[in-house]
Length: 165
Image (cartoon, rainbow, N blue to C red; front, side):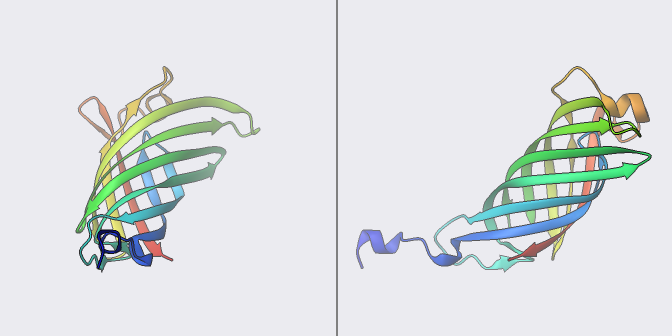
């Protein structure tokens, strides 16, 4: 066996994972549904069995989108990346949120960065963490006051269900 053969990546080193769930917090206001498409890349050379619908140890990147229509509309899109070790995750997303009035006109926008810690229990993924505003306008505080805050820091909470392809 040559050096190149030993480190050759196998077909199962990359995995596509989809998730659907709900979220609440400054990142998306209330998202129902929150849809995610992630690419998981196996960490390490040893056997890396799946844990739930994700590889046991992996780096992942992807995009997320959410939508809420209730009298008016709120939707967002995010880029996210993170690391999964066993059942625990650490990730961060950059999110752009738009808020429309009942006529469909965009009335507010905001951009946030959202680091999160998570735990996967089979296909169920629970994540939470702070949300830091990158723009001057804070849609969430104007609409909902101090709901979903820890001290003065806004907090995000998500509950997702994962499906691997």
